Length: 204
Image (tube, rainbow, N blue to C red; front, top):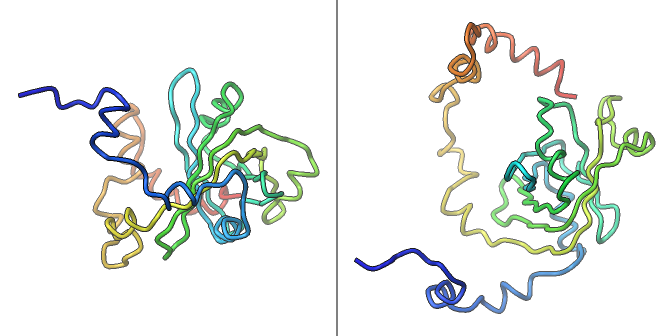
């Protein structure tokens, strides 16, 4: 059996052919009015980054419109309370390149944004993005370099928004169980029991 691993762009193009004209035409170097509408309707974005330790892809979520379109080439993303790993932020400090995917519940298309990022802690900016009187710890400013929408195929195939395909949370290991498997003398049951109230107290 011959080598089945694709090892060059030429081999890749021989397998897939050339991009469709529409897949190239949809890409812009700024946020058009149409693309802005997608950002402002999205309550959830994935942000990918890279650093010396490797790659990271992290979720961000808030009420729709939480990612602010400052202008056609600038996005602002509040960084709320979390686990303090700061994987994305550590990467941005050392390598500003980022890639984002915006999702909108019930909508098949996603929006992709590529660019560079910086972390801003200006008090006025933090106050501007406060929720329930609680400002984020920092704001990630995205300098947009390319924007385009992704067609529905992935979400249609996965049936991501189909309620009949939703998975019962109890069918999977709980957070406490997963932590107990990694940490000696960790009370996973208590962690799970306390989590709903802890979430209420620490979500913002």
